[in-house]
Image (cartoon, rainbow, N blue to C red; front, side):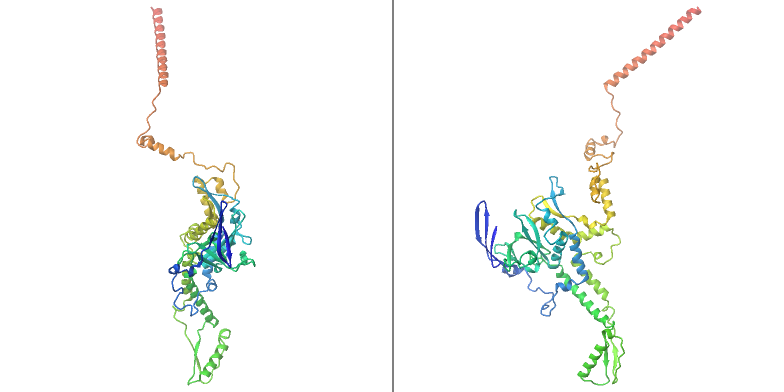
Length: 484
């Protein structure tokens, strides 16, 4: 398909197939927020409180990202997913996924573009998704039409457009890093959805626009910031909340302002603790601290940390909280993965598989074993049980520790006394007697040949007895004749 763009808008498109050419004028495009048919997707008030915008009570991204817990959630999630190696997998006829190497798709997974490594690319991918709710990735193709580079766009410079027929396009503002700001290109470029990978965080208001967790975590982050600002002012003043200067009679406003400015400039902040000399019967009365509940700064910060972690589905033990006393390293890692990492990881695998236009039977999958790379005890236990349970071959277990294969190690071993399921099923089908459960097995019935051999032996034994008896009789008769 060839696009004809004038002043940044698609005027027409031409489709060429089988020697035929079809040219059609493009329908006008509308931004999602400008389409009347989509007004009901959006709430009328997009503020935390009514009139917040007029009072400058806005949640700025640069303000909330300075919160330590929110910063830890964003960087931890993006960093942990980025360190998992993307693998090109293929399923065989038996339904088993195997990692493969393909010259068309493997290079872009190892090196997405010319200026980023794979780790930093996917880390930036997740940072954009977690902070803005959307990640827009522009594809670059080679002469074959295969995607050979991916560029993450600034989400604030991308606009989703919808045509009356329901098709979507993306309006991209100039960006020199992705090659969209060259002089020979217009100020804005409209590209079809086929050339953009769009990873949506959580579509609360519209299926094509995601909402960042900061939508809910922003106010707890600002509350923590306000509490810290107040604490900073308090500690700058020597942990003293101030006081009251009183005079025995009436004083003019100018005199009161002059005395106040004198005290603020000479006895607060770095000058706190200096000696002040008061005249005209004036006296200074320090103000007391707030109640114990109001001054529990640590409890307030702890509450805000819990709310921020809850919005990111982050277990508290990953951002400074105590470890569960009953869990092993493997158990807490599994909790962290299933509650926090599995959803964005699965979404990333799906959009990459579809965005790279992989054929049926191939997909992109991230190696979650990289999360337990330093847990050698758990890895050894799993490998040992896998070999003893005849799940892995010894060489497959050695590969998890980067060890070379051994001769004969590509065979699954089992105990000699073990029987296959088929043999056990055949024995059970013959009944309890065959299994030796109700009675002992009967003696085997002798065949005809053993019977004949036994008869011959008995005849020979009888003949020997008769011969011996005859010999004894003749000897006895001879002796009787001599005596007679």
